[in-house]
Length: 133
Image 1: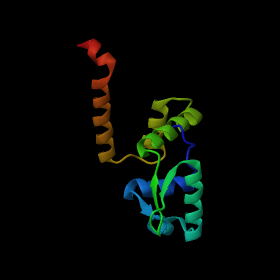
Image 2 (image 1 turned 60 degrees about the vertical axis):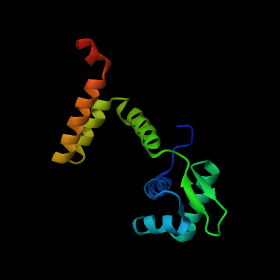
Image 3 (image 1 turned 30 degrees about the vertical axis):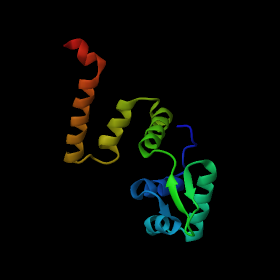
Image 4 (image 1 turned 30 degrees about the horizontal axis):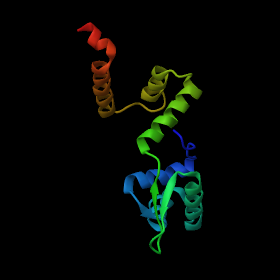
């Protein structure tokens, strides 16, 4: 990730933008205000700061400025997860997964089935699987 990692409150605004696409301050605020309890002016100020940091871009051709995420959601989540995994689990993906699957909150049957499918898919793509053939 070339851009700075978003803060917790910036991440909420980015998630709204990733979901809705380019939006006005009012649209962004309405989608996050009920959960965060922040004022409209706080949302506006945060978006202005995020613009300065390069996290969002601003379209100013209309009266109501529209903001759009400059950073990719998947790439951002991956970078944040990599950082978290290094800091908390010393880079161990298996320890992270074990913690996520049962110790914090048990995974649902649907989640476990999706994880099994992903594991099988990853095994097929692994360079070691072609060596076994």
